[in-house]
Image 1 (cartoon, protein in one colour):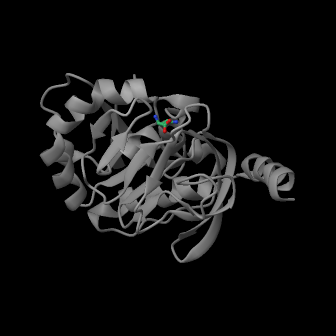
Image 2 (cartoon, protein in one colour):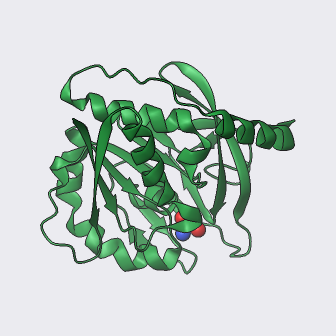
Image 3 (cartoon, rainbow, N blue to C red):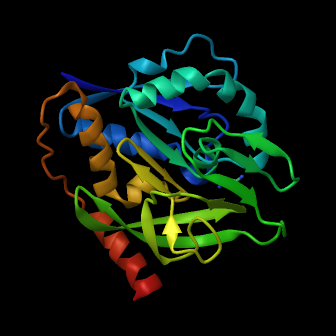
Length: 245
Ligand code: GLN
């Protein structure tokens, strides 16, 4: 049987708004196509993680405090993580995880957390701690050449700049900065975004995009038979109606 190997990093610390649910959605939707998922974990102090063996590396979101706690451990894995990215491992990064893969994150206490520097953006917390980007968000992204609406929930003080390749154009909500047009960061094998949700339960198409990428790393083309997403589509329609009517 075909298999997707997932490394879930810091699942004990980065799980805002049910971000760990994204892994459950991936596993469920992959299994429905006859693809098994093997999920392994890396957290602070985990020794000898072999980053190269994974098809997907996933980090959820967390508050400044958790980001500080795990920053040194993340740095200690710097070279291996970069190698995995260069080797084609897909990276799905949510909010706090998104920020940590950039150049740096300057938090709300003016402390600079060095990022992995995998991507060119950086993030600075808003000066007013009570002013955050909070609420539902809809963006338009392009998956496999098709425009698609992606919906989620954002809650971040961090303002991210220099995202030369953005995940989507903001239709409703804030995005990378207060009232910005751009949201997230997107390249061949990375999607980094402020959207919690969990993101993938609200956007089945995006889940399938990631599954297909990971399952096809072996070289074969995978037929992704459609699943019954009636409930998901209804939930999306209601939210679209409410937010952008
Ligand atoms: N600490 C970050 C911020 O507030 C990330 C928050 C999150 O992951 N939701 O900007």
